[in-house]
Length: 329
Ligand code: GA4
Image 1 (cartoon, rainbow, N blue to C red):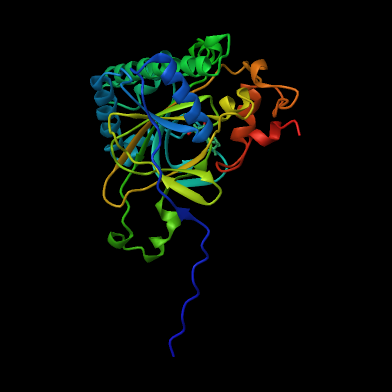
Image 2: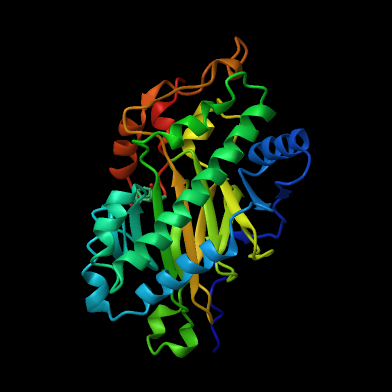
């Protein structure tokens, strides 16, 4: 007798959408309108004509691949990720696991020069590539944030960009390497579950804005609706993918969305992603912009410092929501 196995419970759906692709060289007021619309509707968008030189990107990609190609014992010299440094599979401090290895770095040049000694055999080459990239990507983040402020008709245009250009900004750079994983080529039959294809589990980014670069290999998925995952195409490969972080959701009184996303490993190709997380200084106070709160829509979240929010973030698991801890309702 053949016993039919029960149908798997359908808990997830995959749907396709195209994220808005915004040309930063288009007419300024048009660009700022499109950025605001994208932050409200998707929390994610792509930018083209961003002005970051190809050479800056190639250099950091080359240095990253060189590092990830090293033997495990060499890479461990740059670890453990506490949270900064080299990490493999372990994410954060609360038992999260993913099929990823990474370098998590602070963005201040001194800290990069110091760390690069245990990352590269040519530390100066590594730190120049990384510092050069950070400089460019921070400028891009500031440009996008100023345009967003204009699109929101906020009188103090640098209100967001000021936070990440602060000398004490707590911004981070994350180099992620997702090695290919094909269960068919993997002797371990227990490794065929979806769980083994999760490179970086679902979460929102806690900071203000994230600017992501990937090497043209698909893997990023976003969830605009509970249980519905949308793959983000890696094209055009020249684009940067940008997303709203929790702090920007709080500052815009929930008008912008900090959307849950995750990374899936590719079965054939290595995926490299480079994420810049634009954050304020630890003592910065984050509160809703006065212009975005009304009697009808009072502030959704109480004011908090980035240090307070960061503590709440790091004491929880990757997928846990943190903004609701600061909810006023
Ligand atoms: C998610 C976004 C960034 O990658 C990160 C991550 C951080 C880490 O890897 O150390 C966290 C994660 C991220 C959110 C919850 C906590 C902290 C791992 C984790 C379980 C660098 C960040 O700022 O928050």
